[in-house]
Image 1 (cartoon, rainbow, N blue to C red):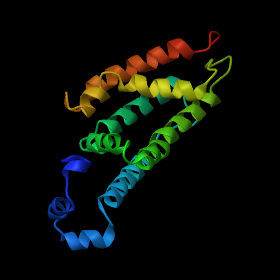
Image 2 (cartoon, helix red, strand yellow):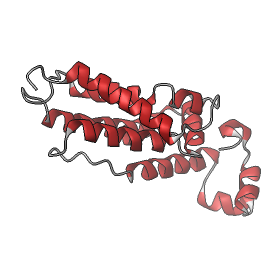
Image 3 (cartoon, rainbow, N blue to C red):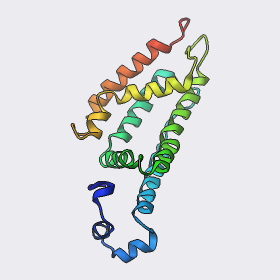
Image 4 (cartoon, one colour):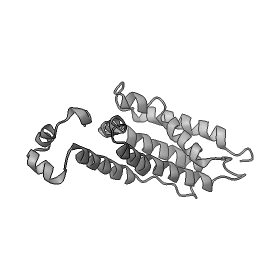
Length: 182
């Protein structure tokens, strides 16, 4: 992850792992297979992240808590390296990028959209396209936090800054989608 896909050789990877290159080849046929295993592990780590989308929970509280957990996951130390590497290799290995998107991002969007759908109604939210609304909220949570972090223009954001951005995203989302009779 430090050198990127193209910059790292199997020999350097074996040295960093403290194993022989032969041992590495026992488990992985080539660097592509090793990279796919790294992406799979990142996918599993992100899938373990439990977001509380209980339909009985208050929308504002759920959005705030989800936003905090989501951004903390994206901007965690080391987390940016995996995402940068997937983004860099996706053109050459589209199946890896597609799998990462489907297994991590799309599933999270689907889960949030399902929660929002449970709250669409005259007393709560007025949303025509919950998939779009979920994607919008996730991107609003990233505003001014994720891109500077992923491009290494800024360190991981502080808890206070994350809270400010998530609160703003939540307020903007509710201003756009709260039912007029709520």
